[in-house]
Length: 400
Length: 228
Image (tube, chains in turn purple, red):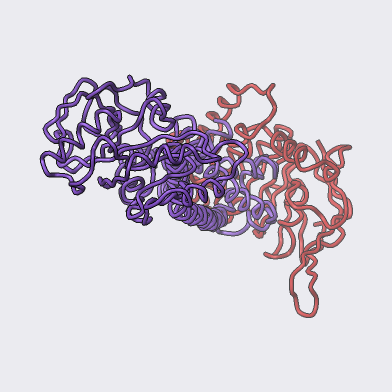
């Protein structure tokens, strides 16, 4: 029998106290892990959304420029569409400060074999696109040809599958990586294909815009400002030069999300600190009560030859060990909740939500375990410090 | 090994009447020689246990010195004093003294678990523990938890623990206070046999019927030691 075995026996042979303290520690670990992963997932989702938007300015038909309508389609993933005259692209391209420019085309499916709800179809021009193409490349997907589509990660469709929109059959050429944004439930295709689909929707009288010429409409124009120009300046040029359109900063579009995200992050951070402090206080109280109950035992251990340092180390290790056990159990429980139910949590939060990568999850796990073990060590260390100040001679003669 | 206590004085800070200071022990000199049993008896609260605890290095005196042969015990730091206590001092505390999560055998082996001396022959210490348990008739219950043991069994366990390393100095605080006659006789036999093996034994008790046991008897009253 050595010091470590005595510690383990103390933990094992006081099951109620040990289970109580380990449960407390595991709740702390779970709160830290759960809270941190949610904050990281929201942050990653937001970053993903920012990079998916990929442009500084978005020009849309004036009637579609109300923030809610744009947000509904671009951010919330609700299927919808709007159009403006395609000539606007050339008009804007000629303006100063416009670096890259590309057009996108929107259409909502009436129904699709993959999904129970209408799907947002987004068309892009592969020759000028700087938003969708890098993403397809990143996902190792094949660029879609005519009547091919690339599907978002959450759609129940796979490479080689056939899908039908407005009676037109398309083939799934690639499936994108998850982004944690509304784009995960969208379908992407080239401008040629979407124009065919828009024509089909018009001929079936299923398009709200019955008077448009499918060959010469765009839904939005995305602009990347040229070096040396600021976004507000270019925004002003666009709004001045074009009619019946509205240019909006993409960052402005997601400012609501950024605010919500910042709010949730702050609240979560405060809750984590609060949970940590409350748990720490309870653990300190529990250890102080526990050491008071066992002070005669500690006096016996001192008499048997343990120095103050050794006794402190013993109590500290006991707390550290229980904190560590609780930390591991809590982290495991947190992962069991977070990993399978992250989709559900994203739905509840209604914000871009993308789980951190494995390395970061491992860091969070390690952090939660270390923080919890530290709480256990601190609580027991405090109690050990108090007990070391007691007079052994008095304790040993007491009947406590 | 001889123990010499010189001018040992102990004040406690506590509210007593008009003063904050309570003197438990007035400048006391005492010598404990190896191979002898010294008994200090007297009324409860007379300062006997304070003197014993100071000599055992458990309580620090307000003034005075304790010498183990030539070594000034309180000049050592806590680490060294604890280590010395572990290897050379046996202490039988008043009342029950068990670590509740350890069984009887593990309680007896507690000094071994706390021992930093790597040269120690663990096997022979364990054999000694078994021998002590046999002599004290507790070998049959060596796996029992303290909560399952009687007062007499717990006291015998404390004696076995104190004797584990065959200490040169053995301190016993009211060792027979709550024991029946049979157990009292057994405890005294063990203490005497320890002295005959060379230990310096100090027993403090409020009982007066200890003449047959002691080589040297003191009486203690109100912090003052009287030679008898």
